[in-house]
Image 1 (cartoon, rainbow, N blue to C red):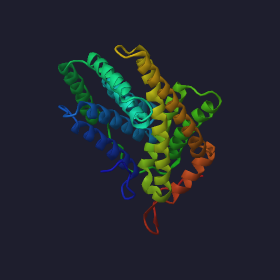
Image 2 (cartoon, rainbow, N blue to C red; image 1 turned 30 degrees about the vertical axis):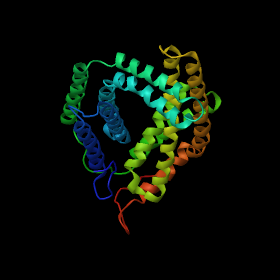
Image 3 (tube, rainbow, N blue to C red; image 1 turned 45 degrees about the horizontal axis):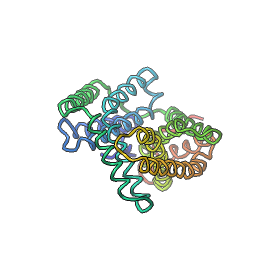
Image 4 (cartoon, rainbow, N blue to C red; image 1 turned 120 degrees about the vertical axis):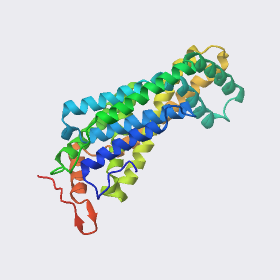
Length: 309
């Protein structure tokens, strides 16, 4: 099943089904992934999607229960953080190569790539230790799957759902406004996290009004990609500065390209963010309330859930 709540299913049951399906898809990558790097990426993405789903019903779960579920899957993903970090710099270098491959000598990329591979091999634990980490993740996913009580039925009204959406939107918008005055790499990373949560939550609700929500999600995806590239480049630069086995000429060239592309990502992200977060949170919530109030199970047959004004 897709990462979407269907119009014909009870809302809470849909959220639980989606979270459950993400756990099962994560388990499919384990315990002996044929591609460890892809498995790491997949598991971390699944955990983020699970957290976004529970965040949508945070006020229905209650803060204590929500925090317990959120921390559980956050900590599960963190088990693989070091493995992910060891390979991420190579992916970022490949991004620079795709964009600037015709600007500097190919040998500079090859030299840095070889040094980054040596660094990765030194950082990564041996295969036996990697297997233990994957096994630990598998056990946590299986345990969490058994422990979590699924939600059932539908809300009496959309008040809590709108409150959760407004909270996610407002936090992303606040970071966007902060960065307008004082741009920092850490701030852009925080902005990205909130943007991704909003994108996932809108994906859950895309059946509410596809012609409006799907293009909106597409633009949020563009924004989170720009934010993500900016963060990856920020993480690459200190590695390049301390990287052994590369010439100073190649080091300076790659550092310059990283800084240039970082600036490009920021210059593209900010105006896109201005458009996506133009509404004040109150207006955003009001618009979503109208969408949800008019969500139809079938043409001419509106759902029974209504917001109490």
